[in-house]
Length: 316
Length: 240
Image (cartoon, rainbow over all chains, first blue to last red; front, side, top):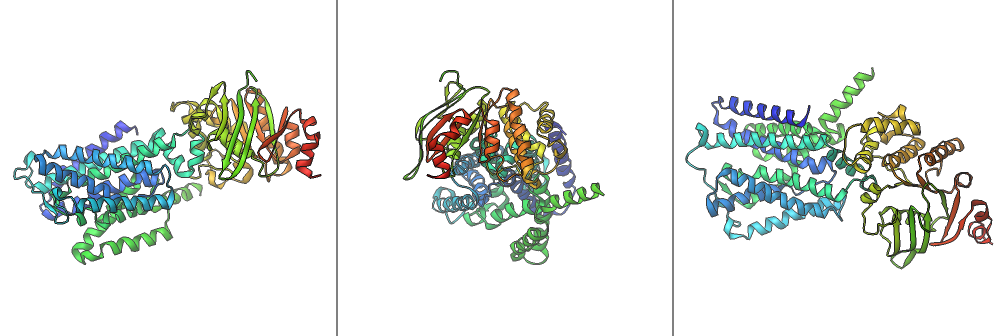
């Protein structure tokens, strides 16, 4: 399927999905689905740098928080429209991604992972000490009273926005994967020196991949302050963002765009169910257990497992 | 030398206090087959890395087709037509053999033009005798097939100069002949080849000219029979 066709299908599905779910009477569905969709975007975005290019980013929370806090800044300064906030947050996180991309110039493997973690810590400290966005106290970001498009509540709008953002992320990820660019990124992942000596402009591609990955993660964070109505650094920089955006592609499969989607829907839904039925403290434990299971039993994730099964069948 | 495709002049490369290349001059004519030999640690691979752009020489000039390429990163040098294979094969392990070739075809030879890439890749695989394994995963190949893939990938960049860095080390006699035939065939396509090798039988058979590096200096350069007969070369290899 061509990229254009896929985009049309993705957005058609997204619109249908968003419209159909408006029939669901239970308000809580939207609150829970928002979080799952958030993880779909984060996992898909993370996979562009982590899965396609092979650079493991432990600093997803930093990008997510940049998106969230750029919304806070625009809210405090102008009460800007939501669309402006989304675009600004995406661009700001993209710029941070550009910076992260330059780190790949000298740092590889585990050293890059540590540096990306440090990036999140530095940014966290910065936000905690920045009074304009509330500092450690946090800041209120109130949902507007009027909800556009005749939707009953603001959470419905946020949900629709998230569905569309997820579609954007998936379309971008798939387009990169299927392009010449995606082949270049895969070459970098497999052997960076050999890629460079095959004519792949490795630095430029790594920076591009880090910027796109960062921008999409930031996009996922832009509506977050409205979702909670109140934002503080420890929720925006939560451990669960860093852990989940790695765990979900790993569990779903990192070689294609569909892996992170499956991983995020599966893990995100399980987490939401557990949160309601057992306890909210169990969330990360479940991620941990599933991660250990998958790394030992299906190291290439669900998609890798499916592929292996398909190959076995066709050989028979 | 005028008309040379590659001109290396006075190249110096140091690693800390150790001088790996100490003023090397070296030239290759278009379509020429040159053997580059020398004991272990003499600087052969360092010279290859400086020419291919994976290392930067501190002093001296490197010209390719008359152009100074000192400031060019490796991926631009291969686009100009200067390809190399690696001593230890570096396949793109998550890709099939065919896809391995598509990377240089797309990025070096065709400038991103995707049409006809698979056909060309198949053509090159036929040439090196890997076409039966086109869809096998490259990580699972045998040693000799991996060497062939390494050369095929370098050839896929459509180079005018190919540097083969010990493509035959550790291979059996018949396997060496396979690779040798492959490299000989490049002459017909007008590709100059620098062959770095320890397998002397292959070097002597292949080379129109041989250069000898010892401890970062070129001590001999010329007709193969004459070069291996010079006292310095004998001394470097066998001692006094």
